[in-house]
Image (cartoon, rainbow, N blue to C red):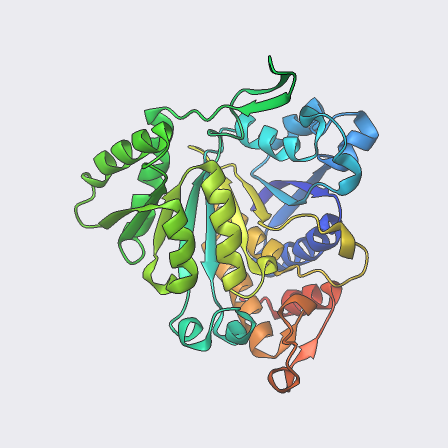
Amino acid sequence: MKKVITVVKGDGIGPEIVEQALKVLDRVAALFGHEFEYQEILAGGCAIDRYGEPLPPESLEKCFCCDGVLLGAVGGPQWDVGPGHLRPERAVLGMRKAMGLFSNARPAYLYPQLAAASPLKPSLAENGIDLIIFRELTGGLYFGRKETFTAEDGLMTAADELVYNEEEIRRIARVAFETARGRRKKVCSVDKANVLETSRLWRQVVEQVAEEYPDVEFRNLLVDNAAMQLVANPAQFDVVVTENMFGDILTDEASMITGSIGMIPSSSLGYGKVGLYEPIHGSAPDIAGKDIANPIGTILAAAMLLEYSCDMKEEAEAVRRAVNNVLDAGYRTADIFPKDAGMAAGLTKVGCRTMGDLITEGVKK
């Protein structure tokens, strides 16, 4: 089977981690008799340097002419001085909006082998963490009207508009409930309904959707309480659904309690099969080029691409097994290597390329 994958290596550690994911995909192709054609595009800071804009039209066009998009990371301090529309992050926002990718799924799973890497106390880590957060991706503050102006009192003032309509809320809620039916049948909707009008609409619509799924346990939670509950008792969560900015923050929190932000992949999908797949971490320019980045989140993102956009569930599971087996064998990148000498006994610290090689070699039918 031939599939076309658009590749965005991006900035910082992006090229390094994407390289490892492509090695894994090549191994999958060879083992399972597929052909993956990669079409590389520039987006983010590197595109600003080359074309003067974060998402050139020719780059965006190739996102529509493929089976899935694999993204490393974008951004860096050298591009933080420009106007908002010329920041590298606008590339990712632009792809999500143009491709209609309203549903961002970010699983947070604590591998048993990494329990010592979690900042949670052992009793909590031992209970296990296996949840998935659905973040609404094309509405909210990130896409609302933005303005910076001088107010009547002479002070510089900025405003960001937060807007949601009921259909934007309903469609992401349905994705969450459908997913819960295949898991532990629990949905938690996170909002700030005690303060925000948009959250009051959010709660009203999600409660309406919940009535369509009587077999799924449902509850609402205010976002500040949700943030506390994630670290106090993460095992209580199965499927969480929330709006754009809350989801952005909570998923980073959830990733850290699983050991490292470098472990977590994400998928961004709309109504079709073509999606955007990426690790949830940033470009980490401070470690770029040092061969110490963790490529596992990107490799697992490639596994999500195989499963959701290419209908290759068996191949995706082979990649996930390889990751698990490499962790079982005691290999760790720097971010998941214990600082305690006793806990580190029997473990081997490896770099980005070696971790990629180990997982690639571990992919088997």
